[in-house]
Image (cartoon, rainbow, N blue to C red):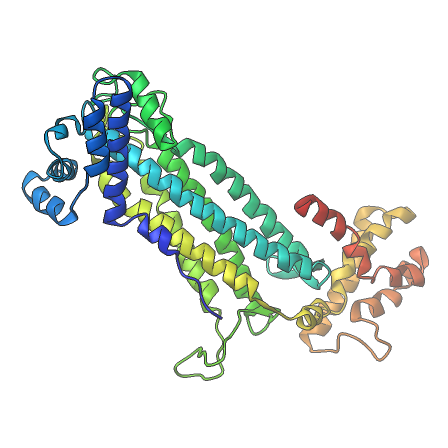
Amino acid sequence: MVERYAKEEMKKLWDMNAKYSAWLEVEKALVRGWNKLGLIPDNDCEKICKNAKFDIARIDEIEAVTKHDLIAFTTSVSESLGEESRWFHYGITSSDCIDTAVALQMRDSLKIILQDIKELKEAIKSRAIEHKNTLMVGRSHGIHGEPITFGLVLAIWYDEISRHQKALESTMEVISVGQLSGAMGNLAHTPIELEELVCEDLGLKAAPASNQVIQRDRYARLMSDLALLASSCEKFAVQIRHMQRTEVYEAEEYFSEGQKGSSAMPHKRNPVLSENITGLCRMIRSYALPAMENVALWHERDISHSSVERFILPDSFITSDFMLSRLTNLIKNLVVYPKNMMKNLNLTGGLVFSQRILLELPKKGVKREDAYKIVQRNAMKVWGDLQEGKAVVNEKGESLYLQYLLADSELVGIIGEEAIKECFEFSYYTKNVEAIFKRVFG
């Protein structure tokens, strides 16, 4: 299968050209805003918006001297203009431009992530419907519990991803804000109307209050939401890795023709994609902590957040995009083995039906503690047989556990043989699958 890597559009949103293009977009919106308020003449506004451009090599050259990237940028742009350059960057400070521009980058990047999530949900939903009634054993502590379906497992994943989708949609509002409030955020040099005009022009909302920067709790919320999304995706990947274990082998990653799993062992088919996803999710989570530490800046601001964000913003978005694309592809092409699921479900000789027996006894007037003893003493016999490798069913097709229960005169005397046999029907455990699916998928 063809692997879809991180979208080119996502990577382009965070290269140097995108960075300076976003800065220029903000600066042009500022010029248009001043023009609407009557400060910048129409002719100068038109010249700036038409002719202003930057040269990355020239910016690097200037920054080598100034040691200030925004000044290097404005100098480069001014060199592409005439006398009208006096209005470029008028009345604002560096962070007004930078933080508002970063809001544009984050907003556009989050749109891609949300689209990735929609694609992932569609893949999960499709496989969930396909395996709505595919029986398998449910496990707790890694030990067999009771019958479930693989569709129910996937329905849980779908519901979980939906929560992350809603959280990120809400966070989109939180991060889509700009500012042009000046050096200390007091709007002393720019009217509040200008800030609102420019932000509206850019498709942002003006931050109700800011100091020299947009407050970093907004960024921390974004990074935290991406970290939580990654945690769930890792959970799915770990489940797939477990299912591919040789002793389990209920599902496995698609293994393409010509693919090789080991340089030494030609038979190997390893869960490399889900292991890769696990590692990527660890990296995405790691960006949440420095984002939180960036919230506490000195007074109106310091610059300790800047170097951090040059790493965590592009890396978190690009890695999340790549990870989500890989996970979607993995789920779409996951090879599922229903026969092995059923084989594993029967592996413990019917022990998965123990609670069903337990719940029948109180209906006949048996105290719960006494009922538990009856059910457990027979279950422990099965565990002993399993340790010795005894067959899990007899020639009649009766499971070990059913055999012991039918031989327990006290139990048979209370509920009867037919009632005991009825407790071993799989349909009892799947009767509400349809209702659960309606709650999850509508």
